[in-house]
Image (tube, rainbow, N blue to C red; front, side, top):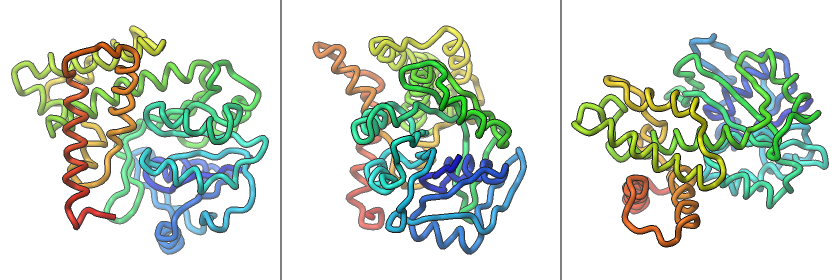
Length: 316
């Protein structure tokens, strides 16, 4: 099975690198600057699960992409989605599976409109990773899980075939017969964590130092949970039992990667993670009045983005 990884950043670099390390047929669709870095240094992964350097890996630029692949794994940031879709389009044939690993749900609508529902799988990954100052993929803990499945549910023949390729590749891979439910639950948790830690500019533990910090975290979680419920994907009790302690542990250093984006003066996925959730809330209850915690967090992030865009050093 021939696999095209769109992007060789933290997520694409990690999962694509592990697949390549396991002997899978992997090509990376990258921009010229990243292609030069990989040609010079190889793909370097630093991880508590094992370091690896992969030299001489196959890369392709968008201008040179002229063949189809069995699987296209999309790992771009949400704000790069439109450009990434245009770049990967030549790789999509009549039997190609597109597996996006973006946060939220909006990208599924965009991808299915462009390539048809039959070409697109649901997918979600759980990993804390970043590109460090050496442009190495830095895996920050031992969690590295990827799940995938048909948007309409069930375990199809092609999902089983993909699972066979993913299994044994050095990370936790799991086919799912209810991938949309899992994606919604991840979105609820991420929106809560990103909204809270970005709004307060601190970790979970930092927020809990303040009186009422735990009530704030749980109230924001409840807002996000209620939106998922109105969309037909009410988070399951087991998910809530798992997420509440993570959001209310005193002294926790847990924070969203979006906070790292803000602290490094980088672009954020505020529109995709918070804004789209708010859009669905408004559509479900157009008569809703009063400003929610989620809305305040979103306004805070959009204010940051506006200031960043107006600063000459941040443009481009």
